[in-house]
Amino acid sequence: MEKNVEQYHLFRDGRIKMPEHLAPRREVRGRLFGNRLMESLTRSRIEPPIVMHLLISGALFTYGIVSLDIVWWTAVIVAFSGCLFWSFAEYNVHRFLYHTETNSRPLYRIQHNAHGIHHQHPVDPRRLAMPPVPGLLFSGLFFLLFWLVSPTYVFVFFPGFMLGYLTYITMHYAQHRYKTPRYGPWKKLWQHHFVHHYVDPYSCYGVSTRLWDHVFGTTAKVKAGPAVPGS
Image (cartoon, rainbow, N blue to C red; front, side, top):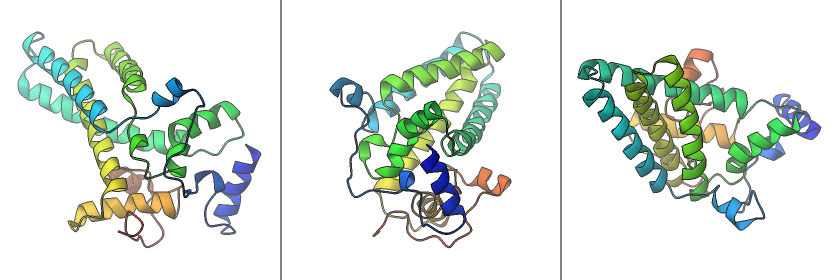
């Protein structure tokens, strides 16, 4: 792990263009596990997690309004706050968990398995969203944490949080699989993510929004090109 930290400092000093462990590779696909079953659990098309989370979130939101008598406009406001909270969580996990250079081997394994493999193979279509099994585990954990804060409003807050997540994985998939849109705000978002992958992995942490990068001063210091090389 010392090599990764050393590469980070070389990158920051301008002596290399990209740390080796975050540099895109020629191969479209990379393996995490030798075991077929374990490897299959780390890969997924974009559709299964979207359908799964939509059904679960829709059921929870309906339960909150119908069975818990939460007023609809209150439910909408709470759900929107959940969506906004997702964007804040997305930024902080991406910045402080996935891109904190460390000599800790356990933390590096988490970083590589959850995110580093994506930097090395950024256009692999089956590593652009968390697969259903780990997705259920992590979403269940978040639901439990929110339930401890509010056993009632969690049923409308959590669907908003997951709507934010679904926006994130949809935008992330599109940024890696489709050409840069002409529509101004989306074009800037595509270019923002392009910089993170191909120019400076220690900036532009927001994927579904650039809001928090502007708030915390982590926007790109360079001019962005197209979001997908060759597009």
